[in-house]
Length: 168
Image 1 (cartoon, helix red, strand yellow):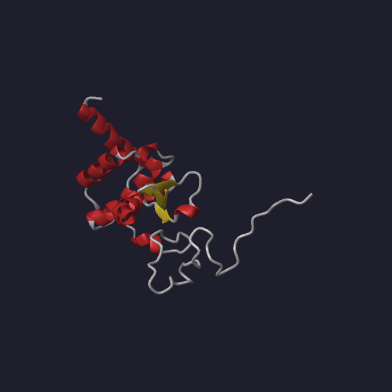
Image 2: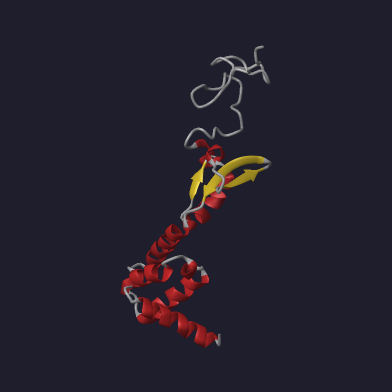
C-alpha cells in the first residue's frame, strides 16, 4: 500500500491557486502584475516597512525587545496582526536584560553615567526604577546599586525613605 504525499510544485511552476508563476524577492512579478501585498517573512527586511512595525518600533526599542518575522516566532513571542494577517513578532527580553536596557536608557536621558548623578537625582532614579518593577528582578538591587555607584544598603535606604514619605 502506498501513501499519498503532496509534493511542493517545482520551482517556477504556476501556483495552483492563481495559475501564475510564483513571485518573491528572488522572482520579480511579471510585467503588468503588481507584487503580492503580503510581505515575505523569510527575508530579513520587507516586513520592516509595514505601518504596524513603524508604530510599535519605539516601544519595542524602549523595552529592549527584538522584532522578527512572524514565521520565526517561538511560543513565548508576541505575534502582532494587522487586518487579520500576522505581520510581526516581538521577542521580549529576559527581565535581567530589560533592567540593563532601562538603566542604559536612563543614562542617555540624564546625559551622563548614573554614578555621576547627585544624591537627589539618584533617589529619583530609584523611584522611577521601583515604579517600573526593577527591584522584582533577581539581583535588581545589586544591579541598580552598581549602576548608581552606591551600596545595596544605600538603595534600600532610598526605597525606605520613599515608602516612609508615602506613609507605607
